[in-house]
Amino acid sequence: MSTTKRERQIERPDLAIPDGERIFTAIELRTTDDADLVEILLRLREAGAEIVTINTFPATKKGEGQDITRVFDIELRDLDSADATRIAESVPGVRVAGSRPTLGQIFGKRVIIVGGGAQVAQVALGAVSESDRHNLRGERISVDTMALVGEENIAAAVRAVADLPRAHILVLAGSLMGGEITKAVRELREIGIPVVSLNMAGSVSAAADLVVSDPVQAGTMAVMAIADTARFDLSKLGNRRY
Image 1 (cartoon, rainbow, N blue to C red):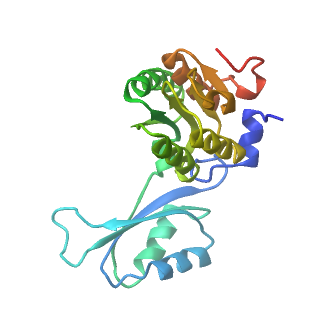
Image 2: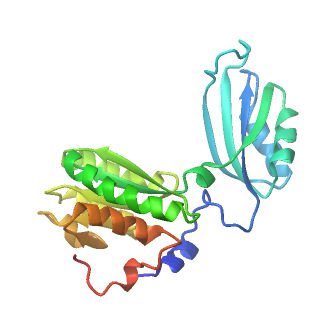
Image 3: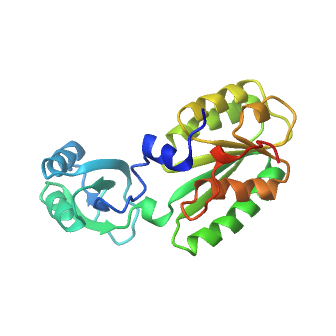
């Protein structure tokens, strides 16, 4: 039985998207090799923070001290940015601590488009145009595209969407998809991420939540399906093919 947009949000909440009820912030720490990430996280947890995401990468900013070698980017809930930066600065090896908006606050929900380059471009046209309408009304929706060919490559990309931060819907754009891609689509739908497919040859269209012939319209409907500012709901469609 299909679930409504609101039911999916309750059953599978995206912790990287602000809910308007709990404090949600991000801190960026520029550190030396001596900084212990585990110690930083433990101190934040002891202060009541719920760690949402952690990213670490080399320090590349020009003009920094030579001893600054790493950057820790941490998104967290239930602790304000002032307290979080103060706690992090007390850890040996942390040279600079600052706050920023979270990626969910900046980029919001993500529409992922995968498939053949020409079709992906047309789907993206519809998705970007529609997301502009909703972002102007306070929503935050971004569009990611990847042109791929080959059953194994596309199936791997479909499965990877499950682990992409803030990915809320997948659009498959191509002329022929089936086999392992169809299995991957079913797996993705089982964990609550809806899939839109262009009307194409192969078994993928039979496994998708929605099948659309016009690629521009497919991108438009994908954005409408995840936008809080839209009344469109995939679960309420009487027809799955358009």
